[in-house]
Length: 354
Ligand SMILES: O=C(O)CCC(=O)C(=O)O
Ligand SMILES: [Fe+2]
Figure (cartoon, helix red, strand yellow):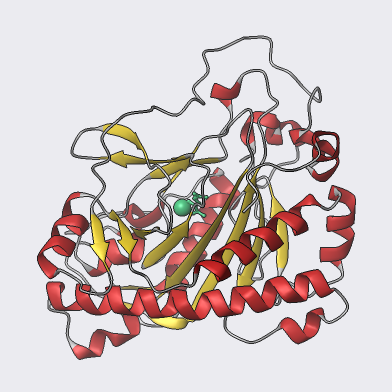
């Protein structure tokens, strides 16, 4: 697997212009927040997928909202081919990527940058604003991404683009594994939470989607002002993340009231609980807050799998008004457009007036 084998001259050409060096520099110099904290003990729980320990899983869900998964059964060769193809796609010139992806239906694959918020059609969603300055360099999330809905085999629409077609085929294969892993974990959580059979619609594999991200090297001279991805919680039931070998992900530990670096460990996946899981569990489990920091010297590739409830499945709990995932998503979209941020579950508290 290539860590950072790109020709340094070629890098800026493939970056969106505002992530390139010398586009816009801040006046302040700042301490470097980018260095990994070495030697810190790793306390994130580990769940063995071959033999799920229900008690350990319950502790991980209530205390952390995130855990590592080992023995996930995904072939290493698939993981490394996926990485290699992703690097090659992102390495293309920025303008070429825009032209290429502009010619492909977003239902098959879409390219975005500057924000992880997308419309249901896979198009980047920004705050409504007449003022382009609102989208200054520090307001962007320093990330480029590919969004791939897994519901239909759409690689046939990519026949004109062998690299993308091959990437889509690999993602299809990876998606099958991700759905298997999510189902196994959700099954175990169902037992722990004693959910009833009528709650089967809480996890719908047909809603699965993959995101492939590239976080650029940070050329900005004030890195503490910019994030690869700003603090957020995921809207999903669960998210499964592969951060390969370059770290950057940080989670917020409610217990310690502190940010913790999530170090990459070889052949290990991370599972986050999302907002829908928080609601399903009646706030017993928490949707974990997380963010991604950048590196000066290294790019970072990660792949996330997100799975949701059936869109019209009613989520009932004593902590929130009954709502469907479609309603939740529509509210998030409206908040991102009008406020620039996701408000999330608190919108659905029983006594909340909008
Ligand atoms: O790239 C990562 O490590 C995290 C991505 C993420 O948090 C997201 O897509 O919601
Ligand atoms: Fe996330």
